[in-house]
Image 1 (cartoon, chains in turn cyan, orange):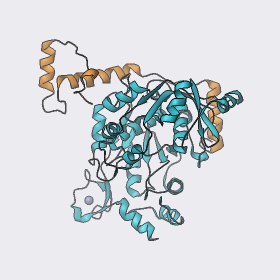
Image 2 (cartoon, protein in one colour):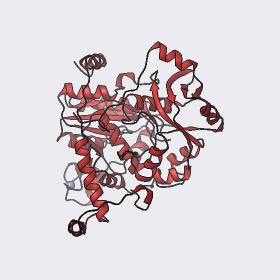
Image 3 (cartoon, chains in turn yellow, brown):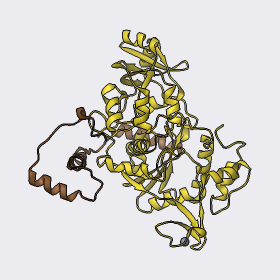
Image 4 (cartoon, chains in turn cyan, orange):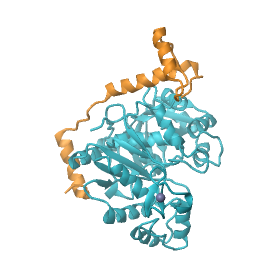
Length: 378
Length: 75
Ligand SMILES: [Zn+2]
């Protein structure tokens, strides 16, 4: 079994009554649902080796070097923003509770409170300060200080898909039980078309298992709704995936749209789930035209010590001459024979209530998507 | 990622003969300096040493298997 990032799977849980009562008594900071879920990701080891919110040294090294202070690869800051009033309270307290609504999710040992430069953060992580970029727009709404420190989870955040919610410990046991020594992880925020299926199955041909790991959480307008992605994959699995070599589990964290840096982050999380390989396609975690089509693949050459093997894919398309799904490496025919799996085109058809052609999307999958009144985030 | 940020770098000494050899070797590759090549190779080697086997207790593993069976992931 592949070692977790940093060598040890983090577990920071205390679901005892005493811990929960104590959390009720502590001064409170309120958090969003996405933040509550990321606390779960820290405490259950998805973000291993992080044990809490980054203190300043880690934060700055992540921005400047794409690494933690101990040189371990890490590209996305995991931080908690606070305002002046919170800072006043935090300066007085050693420990506080993080509340989602009226539910304590975790306690936080206050280690450090520090200011940060949002523009620099944006430039380093997203490669732009344009507020046209959804990640930057989100960042610019954050409060002006950060608080770092270890956390202990006292309650799991609510999930809409408990039957698919697996933590790294569970996937690791699952892969072992299934006898999978090599597992390829697939990140997605889309309902699957034929191009996705070919990428996944091509990768699976060379390893023991395939772990489809849809990202559930805050997304942007026009993205597929979470329940649509799940329903589409359930259908695809039922009709077209071998049970003994493919499985499905969700990951609840928001999309940052940080392109190359997020691709590294996505790979690290899948390593913690126990994947040995990770699929990186065209414009992975990108948005608009902010990143070059293969930038998210090139960044992996900066990380020989990542510990999970990226599998780089170019796009698949249908070739009328070959009569099958191909990619540019294996098809000698000109573009006049090619039909691309355009996400935009498929979306347009689905919005109109039309079923995309079978060479683009499995009919069973299309039918399931069309059963939703509006399959896209409004 | 950012070699201009001096505070994040230390100098180490390597034999001139090795330096010259590496300098030749990186021509036409993506490496822009001997330093970046040496850093790459060291990180690769050190990461291999750090790999550990993650073991769960039997009790832990049984509990996890039970949940996986309840969810239908295991028979
Ligand atoms: Zn062809």
